[in-house]
Image 1 (cartoon, helix red, strand yellow):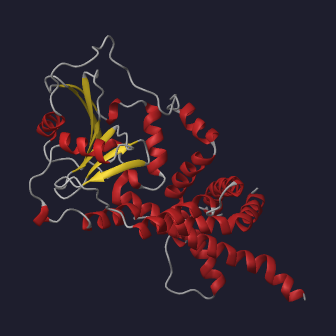
Image 2 (spheres, one colour):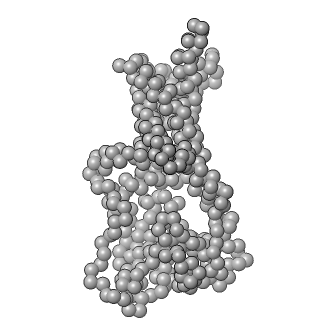
Length: 374
């Protein structure tokens, strides 16, 4: 059985190794994308010398309506920094950022850097292919991802020494100072990088497979007895609401109520712009990096009084929504902050060594004997 698994492991590695290598190296490059973007954005914030006479949210919203009527904003995003812009978001991609002191449009992104991240991400997912070729490329990366999962799991089995002694385990856990030849070094490194990166790689690879194949996600949802979240589904809506709310408090007053409840312990506030008949204002308070659902909570305020009617925390979310968050941001490690990203990056780096040493070992086993015969 061990020999059968070994040969299947070797063949899968040879066939999909190049794709796995490309996904791993782009994963390494993307490790700290979020922090780099934040560093660039802060460099473009309003300088302290210009932070005078901050405009109200009502004034900024009116400027947005007049100057940018095509941005039908449904949400306002505030960042806990005096120089940060106020973002008016319409959907997932359409947004405008305004200088909170002048009302002028602000750009806090580097176009060249943004294009770089986009190119790397597209190559990571589908080799940057376009049109019909993209679907083919996605299938290639999807199948390779599943093969990578098999390689990691079968590698764990093959890593186990034939003799269960501590000296044998220790030899496959720790690097050596010297190796008699390159073959021994590659064999040893392949085992060491594989065992130390196995757990994070299983998590990263499986969540990656969930982007390509729904059935991989269905396994998790079924195992945990959860329903898959429906995109665009609305929450419970209040019944018998009046046509127009009489004398609602201003957005700024309501946000002040949120800040009084939250204090300074927040990074972003996402304010859902209410309709004329909405009795409540919804505000999402994010204390994390934007990818950590466990560090977010939602407040519902009475628009007439400013009273906080409801507070929803991470524990209140349905299991399906939690799984969705883990899938999206657990894959990159972002859900667990800088440490999680670092672990994900190091695991991707280890995968590069595993592919390289695996190819080197396969070359010596499969190709060099043929070359000697000729």
